[in-house]
Image (tube, rainbow, N blue to C red; front, side):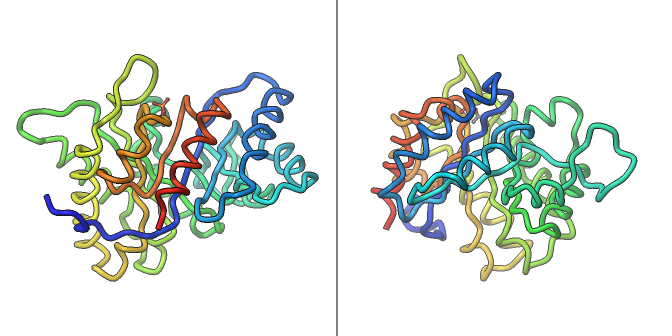
Length: 267
Ligand code: PEP
């Protein structure tokens, strides 16, 4: 495959999904401070931290009180599609926006494993865009089969999750390709070439759905055992627009190194 076949937006995204970590606010504050301190020279990379819901507000206050040159954006790891009322245990997109979140991860495979489907995710994406949040839509197959059925699976995920999203709104959506087989401890990452093929495939789906003008504005990032050692490969050979990081986002040194590499390689 020739180079430069993938349309690119220049500013990279590095998003940390802290999942259900750390166990105390004190540790969460410590981690955010460690991460944020190292960003003084970062200009071209967008940094997003997605802590557990209950830490969003205190972490926003903490960032406000500090005079860091660059403060990371805060995002949530999920949201609900209903606007308010009788939805026990849920958190609305407006609530998230009002406490300072500007991004929301939607359709993560760990939420899908708990029963969330493309239709639920579609409703959440629409709600989050209306509230001013930028959704990070996760897609990814659990296995790769010889007949390439996984490509149809990804196509269906994208088409169903983005059903009814307008051309004007689509540039707000960030797509995270996260093959499930690559996520978590004991897994191995996709290769930059595998990501690159998927990147082109996803852009083709978006092109057919939203038109050529829009696809250059949509960022497609990689997630699944990404770390400081494979960052360069995913950017140079995979043409990734950034990363969704699980474990590496809980290690301030690794996270900062990944941001630094993204910044250096950005044009
Ligand atoms: C994830 O769960 O989104 C993820 C990318 O995890 P990890 O980086 O730990 O594989």
